[in-house]
Length: 412
Image 1 (cartoon, rainbow, N blue to C red):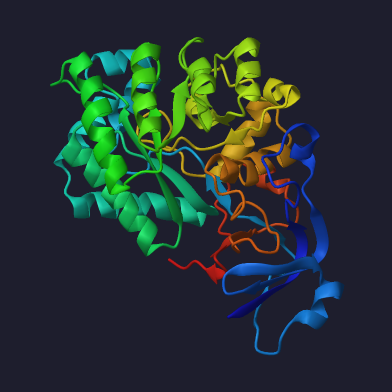
Image 2 (cartoon, one colour):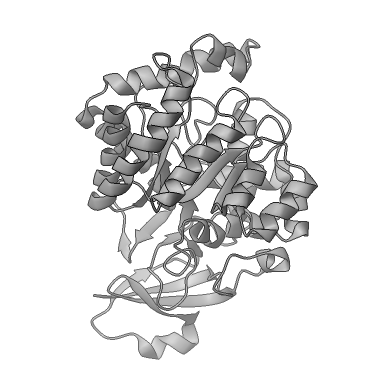
């Protein structure tokens, strides 16, 4: 099937080097005014000025009129906790009244409250809930989603979560990339050392053998897992062929980012408290920082990751939602772009690249998605405006862009 998207007022191709973008490259958008896209069997065959491509459009092509609007690649959300049951609205109210994230967790709330709800949910219940979360993301232009387990903390429920994610990936239209996050919290019915050993010696081998996850993650923090515990989990994952991601340095420096560099992790995520010395180690190890301003915002904190410093030091930054029921109930990547610009000092171009092509590379998908170049899958968004800067400028607007995955328009 051939599709021609015509009358594009501003095409943001993000054409560039075949690697994550750093430094000044984060502002190079590959803009083409008055543009067209040609798509064949779900992949882009040409992207360029309308005057150059008009003669290449076959008579049988399906034509989409972009209405003079801006077209960008679909968003790649590289850090989410997509699959869970219930919500934590009561804790939201507690935080407003002054309770901290750590205080709520110590009282039996937080992650463990979602674990109890998720353990009690059937496969069909979890599938319906997670499909709903995915649909929120699709409606705002997200076409690829990294999704973690971590609300089961036992074999039965961790497997159920990963199976739900596999089912959603197979049914489409969004691509779901699964990550094992059993090292999210210690379940209340387990001894800490025994639980870590179980993850290492039993869960990781079983998940890897069943190919239920592509990545393994761990939450390294004072109220989660120590650096030593995280190291043991991630080394076991690496030995079984899983790539690594790490929750690190969210509340205190020295909690996991150096380990990410030592083990060659794909990403180190959060990094609100990271130091310059550790940033240099991440850069030298080619670890991509995944920045999650939504969780800072939703927890009413003020210490955002030092994104501007990361760009200056030459790190290939990524921004993502951290969508989850507790610290970041945010599914909208455009809202994350606004926070990235207003609270972390990124330009609209830098934020957009961090949410698309750089995010794709953090998931080993940069050769397939993340930019609108010939040969890549046609995952794209026709926005309701004419200039890419309006994505971050219009904050939390109820936009309804036209979303295409593999050249097919996504319908509800």
